Length: 377
Image (cartoon, rainbow, N blue to C red; front, side, top):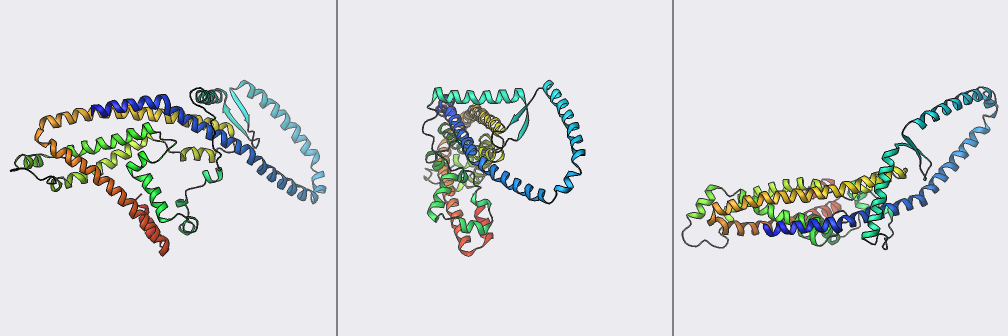
């Protein structure tokens, strides 16, 4: 436990000094590429829409020239009144601390607080400058197909559409599922731009220690008494019958704790949602991305602090447990290692079962079987 605590402290330093800048570099680089993409694509769409609107207006105006002339005088009077009102509103706006921002993509206007915009954009510039100084910020950022990048998850579509569009083989889908759901594979075989190596290793160590602690927590007095009164030497796997109930409890409690810890993490799909929602307002897009970048760093710092404090508490509990029950140490260590191995095998079998049910549902065209496969995610 002491070694793991020191290792997590080292991971925290690595995150603070290096990995946090890598996350910022990735977010700002991706955002810059997306804004350039919007500047290239959206003006063409707006021009096409404008041409369509002008054409429809011209067609309508041909049949209504005579009727519009009779109302021209009244409209001129209304326009003069509206001009006076607009001038008055402009004077009022100058006294307010409000900035009217014109979007450079489609000239839509958004009212935002002046100080808020300045602070957010200043934060964004600071992130960019940190990336330039500490890392090669503009190092060969690969071009991204944003139509594919922002495309919805294929499993969110209708079942018939999934059958037609999902071209992955059994092996490809199984390996993708394994890399995503299996703890060892996800930690050592998958690169996650929003979850750097220091965070993933800390999460991995936390899971290993939690398995051991939860296993010790459910060793009751009856098991301790049984171990103490064993005559002769116990077999190597003699602990298995005594540990079955503990394994069930450990699985449930470990899953709940993992879900709670997972609340500290931010997935990349949150950035994709911001891209899709704010694509017509570049200022809001920059503000939201700046907030997201700060939120990720704050969450991960809170995660490291939470893990360090939790490890100190768990270390005290394990010291007390092994001091009070010295004859249980052998069974506790063996059963903990066995528990870790069993849980990893179960996760592999769950991925295999999920993949099998998915392809069976495709072959039978049965949506109920497909929903059963989603249960094992």
